Length: 61
Image 1: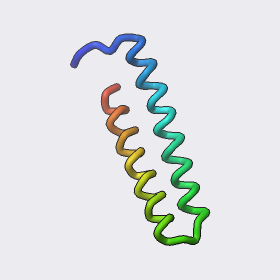
Image 2: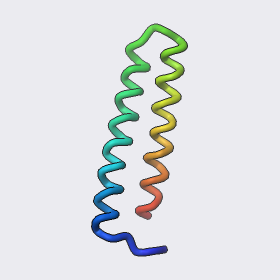
Image 3: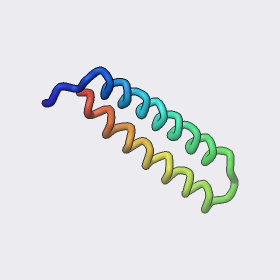
Image 4: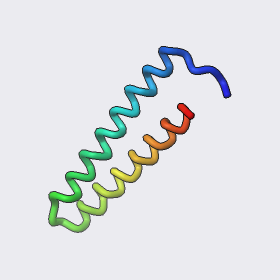
């Protein structure tokens, strides 16, 4: 595996924080709405950002 520089590690950390925040926000939006179509869209967005988070986190292993 290639060595990750300090700057790259910082950038990945920042992106992980942002992705985690989006997962939480879209999850909360999904819980708060009564509109089924909107709930599904929010859940899809939360899932998409969770996949982004997982992919970034995998780069640190």
